Image (cartoon, rainbow, N blue to C red; front, side):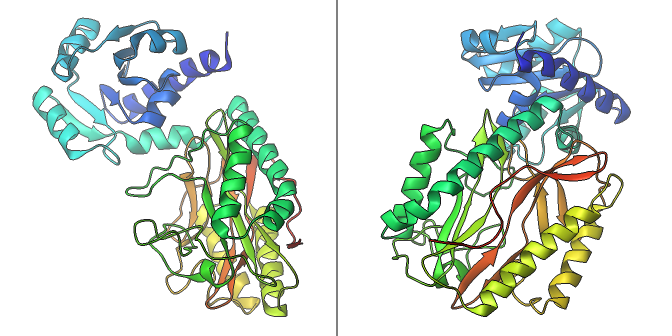
Length: 393
């Protein structure tokens, strides 16, 4: 029996408990990451999970692959969208009175079709239940994220030579992506956020890193043009400027998020002091984080520490700072919890969190740090091992 075979039954049971507590009779899971999490396959399919009884996986393509990958017992063909109610009735004896749908990511056209097909059912948003379940990782998931962290550390050891071999930011990105792909990276870093595009992460240097963009994170970058205005550009990497490498590693679908700063030559004292401040903030938050601590309390502390260090302006972005200093990671880059201004989630054992205090200096560049931590009964344990300091090439 594979690890996924062992994981899926417990995940289904957790969802069924949550459905019962939320007075939902069943949930229809279609989002790719959620589908994989609860069924063990990423095939084009719909997973119906009743609040009681066996789930039903209805597969459009490929049925053969889904039956091979998924440990679920009931895997049937879906020959047309309109057959969903018929299959569910045949499996459960009726349609749910209250049906859960992933309303945070579901296209409107899909939602309207579900409303039409399940006209007698009340619909409700199951996304918060799904994300809350996925927020706490199993031992297997933590082992995968730990392997991803090892891959990220291995990459960072090669970055100085990659920088010396690269003329432009885009050259560096190509070398990093080649390294990751040849070490088993899927090439994507899934996110929940709409309309954010999946990419490995961000690589940028010097003043380009401080350019504003539509990125949902604290940093932007020039990018390759207005059609993709963030991350690496065709600009040359210069001496004595910070080079930021923020590329998530991926192992069996699980993500470790990590950022390091490199430089060909010295950086000015202000940038170095700001980087030291970022490390100090990260370490302070890691010491304070314990099961039961509210995520928002960590964010408030990060702001106080940035202010005391004299770097409040530009902390977590400029001119529009983002209202968070960390985020969950797992099968998606933006898992819960978010270490944010509005965060009221009590931290719990098994959560995996990336802390990323960063500073933006217009006209100069970006410094900062990011590491992935797992919450244990005693507090946060750092999974990334590569040194946090600036690396001079």
